[in-house]
Image (cartoon, rainbow, N blue to C red; front, side, top):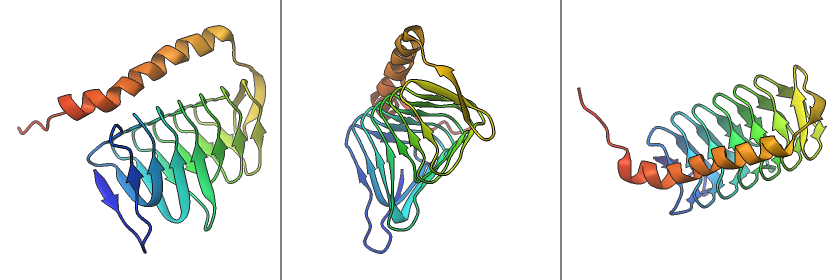
Length: 175
């Protein structure tokens, strides 16, 4: 993994987490227990701070950043889909951010909320607990069902196992 200290700001990665070798973690970034950070992801805490809670998954090519002096918070059991951009929001526990979504400055995403693929959550927008938000700009269109929560609890357990599975089973193949 590519960990970089910047101007005295040093990443802190829990021993049980897995950060893919070509992911980049810079500065004041804290990564919790059994977090999986995928290929090409960039978490840049150069002048802001990033906190990724336990058991979360930051998928391939996600970019996470924070405004100067501010903190991006990604809660526990959060899934951030491939190619998403996360910039200074507060994302509560059990949230699913769909692939290619943008979650902007000071937005707040409530517990168990779901952000649709390609959605743009604008500055200061609040997505309530268990709400579904989609579109550009994102709008709340409904609520998450118990069936959805049960299904995503299983999906998230798979990502949780990735941290330990990747540590022991990922091997570079030379052609």
